[in-house]
Length: 409
Image 1 (tube, rainbow, N blue to C red):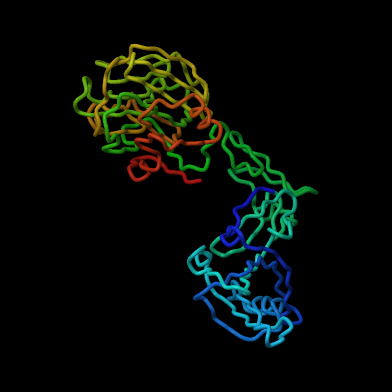
Image 2 (cartoon, rainbow, N blue to C red):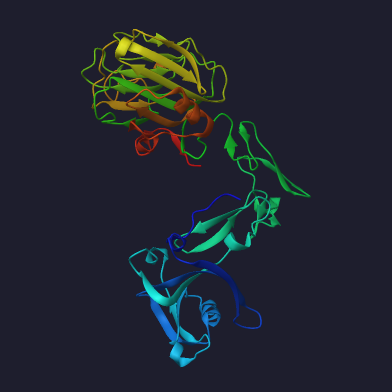
């Protein structure tokens, strides 16, 4: 079972904590059951809805279970001089999870006890078939998160094809141990929910239906400070490997560069993948790497002004590198990033011969530093997008698309 965060009230130090299981019958057909976690010498102040004399703490807890709104109880024994034999005052509280905070509403009260019902799987360990017991702090309840093909309150029920569990046009077949998904080409996973070569399948994707100057995503003022180093990474999928177009998938342009429109670009088909950092003319740096299939691939380019050092990564692995690329140069801030086009002017000057498509792109990000090999490998393997040094990021392009299809997961 996966570890879960404990609710706030179990974090207080130096207090006695214990649990007791209570069942309360509301009628001949309805019952509620729960474990109560209890703190001694504590009471919650300010949330009492109902107060009454009770025969004991168990009876107080049963009263809470009989009221659906009740979220916790306070109980305090009557004074010893009354010889109450366990009798005392019961208070039923109503609140959300934020109410139970140390040194705020939960206060010291000698001889009192504060109890909260833990409804669900945390104490009973009832999640079956590999399900994980997760805590909902707002509702103060636990519930099972099931692994396919299991479902239900305790993950004991099998999902069948009737509920259409298979994704991405997969074929579903019922079996003794649940359903089985036969995935369409390019997909995998228990429910065919994962895309081959694309760990970031939970991110939106942009589909370029054809190579045209009308299809792109754009972000103005994409870089807020001058760059002496950077890393740009993206996931890309070509759908026509026979295209003679340059297939420029990323470009950054600003007006003060030596060659407007070529401050940074990554083009896939010239004939190998080519990168550029503010070079004059139309010539970039040939990485010696080519994408020859229609599968998803992860691309990362790093550059550092010192020695003009550059690196090119494909699918998490360093493929080529060099020096002397715009040594001691700074890339000016304030320019525009376009996905799917090469810019010959800032934000424009597109040519069909440079346009990307048909294909797909997702998770285009730029950092103001050179990422480590392990950072890049983690992006490719599990879509771990480090936030340190992010200059522009994928979510910022969603509202700047034109002539493309945005596909949400």
